[in-house]
Amino acid sequence: MNTSCFTDSQITAILWQANAGNPMPALCHESGTSNATFYKECFKLGGMDASLMARRRSWKREAGALRR
Image (cartoon, rainbow, N blue to C red; front, side, top):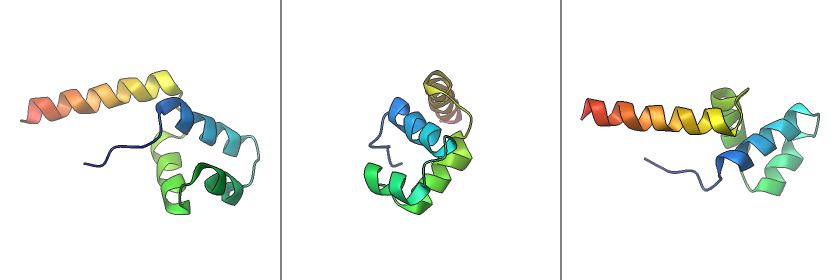
């Protein structure tokens, strides 16, 4: 599985800037992501903050361990 090269706080900062009204192409260019990656992260992590994202990541890790 691929890991993100961005931290949780960086992802939330980019999403908050998009919600604040900054144009999406400019945000993608600044952060070095593609439009597809931006929309995927926006759909997956829309209203979360960094603490919720970390909790979600730990839940996914725990679920994977339980499946194995």
